Image (cartoon, rainbow, N blue to C red; front, side):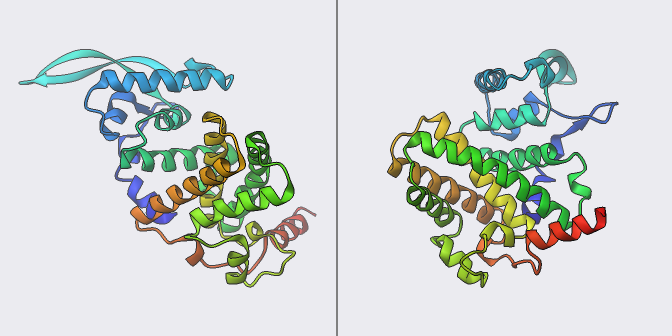
Length: 275
């Protein structure tokens, strides 16, 4: 997602700070302005919701949200102290997930912090990996998260194998502009037995990982019930990811090149090196 990365160097990256230990953080007041919140008191409501989400995920709030006091200018060179928060990347991720979804910048923030947070979870030195290493890392994460998506879909009423195949198609149709799984296979010249995800580059995999993580989260958050409702949720999340890529001038997933080597071939190559 090179275009997304370039855009964010002028947005969320531009307000990032690094402490003396090399840890990244963002100030809540600066993030509020970036997310177009004019009244910080309204943004505090979002922060409190994010803290609740952090607690409900069994994480220590103090590890991600730090109370600080900052100085701000109030005119004619005068300054005054204000309360603020130092947010790590995970805290920012939770904040944008609870911010006003109607704001375009919030949608961009959700994409940015979700992808970056997931990358850090995969491996600390993600940005230094080769393209093949990124493919392997994201594909493994995709396999694990698909289990969570299956469970969330089942809770919503998607029970049989056929139901889940239809559910998956709705997600693909949203992300790929109406293309179903078989259509994507045809474009990639894949056999019936071959998995689509094993023949995606890291950029295409990252878009699909975001689709899967956000669909699972939305199904659980909204307590979706019924196969049709679950299908529409998957479609709408896929389309939102697609719309975000389009807004940033990115390449649509169906137009991204198919790698020469499959995930299985890369894994065999990796195993030979280990031997």
